[in-house]
Image 1: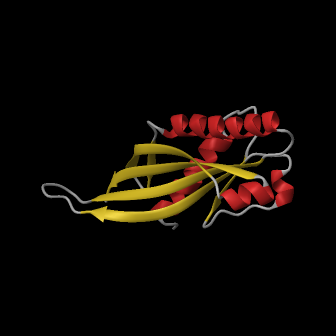
Image 2 (image 1 turned 180 degrees about the vertical axis):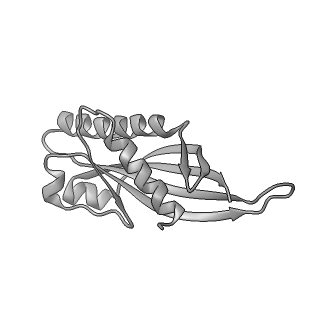
Length: 148
């Protein structure tokens, strides 16, 4: 039996893979962001990363689990300034679409319902990584809650 955070991450990967996006992202579950230059040359990379888990004690009912996951959408930006802006905008839009897909989702793991409680989007980048390697990322912070 797998842990609930791992099963949630795998369910999210399957859900994203089941959608049709014009960018045709390559989706995987990882423990840390992992990519290389060759897989970024022709694709948008989406990685679901388990961030943490909290147990919130219940005062009048059962305790709740809170699961935090990060979903990174990465791409390599190249070409002139207009092309770089287009690639970065598309990366951010893809992250927005994925976040909206997940925003009202309920997952059932081991007969327990876990629902998405919060979705936050950030366009983040390491200025050296962007300048030297030309990699842009948009990150979705996902908080899910379920009864323990």
